[in-house]
Length: 121
Image 1 (cartoon, rainbow, N blue to C red):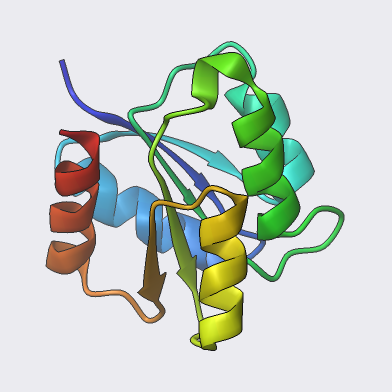
Image 2: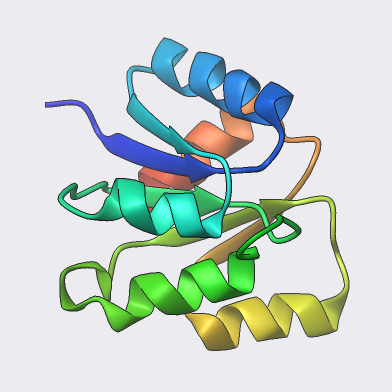
């Protein structure tokens, strides 16, 4: 059974790039366009890994990560932050909210796939 990934990003281009890269790698991919939509999509699904951006309208990545971690069924689901941000204080804030890892955009497809496989194991 393929690994499933929920990718949350407000950029339609980035969502499409993630969908293409991850489906080519054999993952089952679900998409959401902001944190609030991400929590709606997540309801009733059990992804192996969640990928989220930080800077999004309506609900940012920090709020999304906190929302995911409040859910008993997703408390330990790995969450990778994929963002243009690289400030140490933002990384620490994401880690404190419950993020598993941090990847800076633009992403390298092979490194992203490897990271997903590592945290999903």
